[in-house]
Image 1: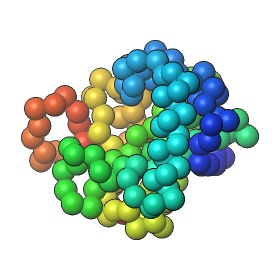
Image 2 (image 1 turned 120 degrees about the horizontal axis):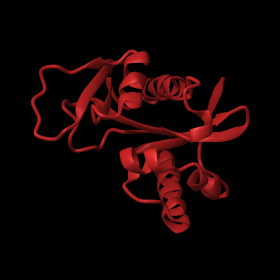
Image 3 (image 1 turned 60 degrees about the vertical axis):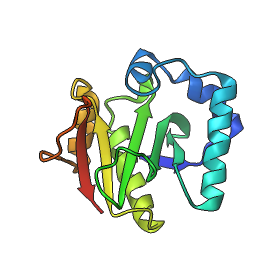
Image 4 (image 1 turned 90 degrees about the horizontal axis):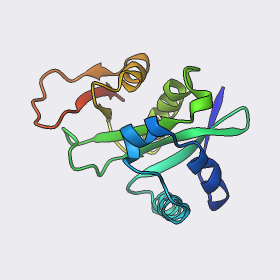
Length: 159
C-alpha cells in the first residue's frame, strides 16, 4: 500500500504543504519553513550515508507524498539501551487509511535490517488519541512501569 523513500530537496514543498494544525500541535509546535525543512532533509541524507543518528523517510501512498516517518536511537529520553524512537506524521488527506500503521511497521523492519536497535519506542501524549491508536494497532505495548514527570506515555515493541 505504501512506500518509504528518502526525502530530497524536491520534496520540501509537498512535505510542508502536508502540515496542518494537528501536525503542528503534536510534532513540530510551529509551521516549517522551506529552509528548515531542506536542512532537515540534508541532515537525514548525511545520517543515512554515515549509518548513524536519525534516519527519516517520506511515506508515499499511490505515488503521492502522504507523510513522514523517522527512527532515532539518539533521543536522550529513551528508557533503555537499544531503544529507537519512532516519530511519524500523515498528511490530512491520507489519514484514517492505515498509512501510519503501515509506515511504523516498515520503519521497524528498517531498524532490524540496519541493526539500529532492539526495541522500538513511540512516545506519545495520551491526549493524542490518533497516535495512541497507531501505536496499539502497530503492535506496541504501553510501558506501565516507567514513571516520568513528562506527560508522555511510552509504547514499545520488541524487535
